[in-house]
Image (cartoon, rainbow, N blue to C red; front, side, top):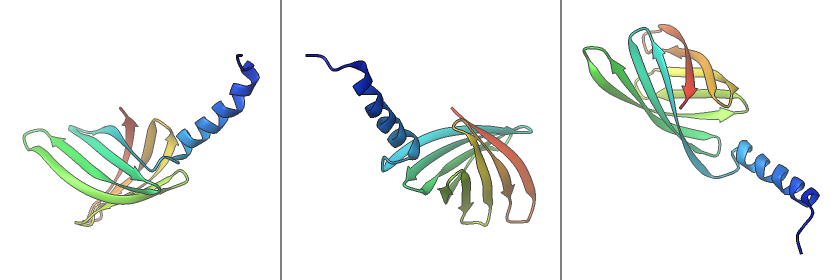
Length: 117
């Protein structure tokens, strides 16, 4: 006996709600951005609304500098900070793009957009 196709639709909706709501406890993502001559690879791990990870900043002539961060996601808002005082506040534009402002410990503000790999 096979189930009618109509019975699969409610389960597909429930499954997609779990996948896109962050209901699974832990997940990880890789994002990237470019600013002037620098490139950053951002590895993010989620645990509920809490996030943590590392930014690998590649600068010409200087090599790679890692910056570990902690933060949280509430709705479409993202906040993260580094122990030195750098902080990021932004908004999820869609599932593939985040835009916001990085404020350095010296007060310099940079508008950045990161894209999911």
